[in-house]
Image (cartoon, rainbow, N blue to C red):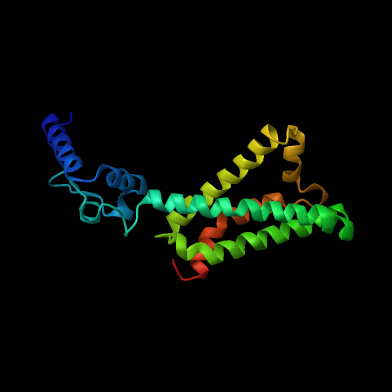
Length: 196
């Protein structure tokens, strides 16, 4: 049977720390997990040590919210690149290469554009570690798929079959490869630039 006095002291210690600490910074710390923030629970005191958060009110000089905001800004800049790539494919590449080859070339070109953009901008994003890169990459994946289906259904009025066709690798489509590149680009760029 658990000792209720111990739980009461732990709750009091947590409440005291919450009152002494910047609450948004604490939430950021908890979102990143104990290892990334120095958040520890001692076995003797059963109290939280929030030294990194209490010291500067954030983690590593900037907050998680700023990392996610920067990631959103960088992802948003990929939309015009993808649209320009699609226009190039439809207006020029299809005429020169045919539809199937144009889709394949366009997919490779878009992967290159995403890689180059991420390579150039990853220092500004300044991820702390591989975990931050993974979160950004998965966020970019979710935003990309959400934008594709949201825009496709609500604005372009495409059918589900039309929206799912690029996922089948039919007719030269490399869209699943593009999604893999979108997901891995932050980690690969940070690793290649020596940030990890």
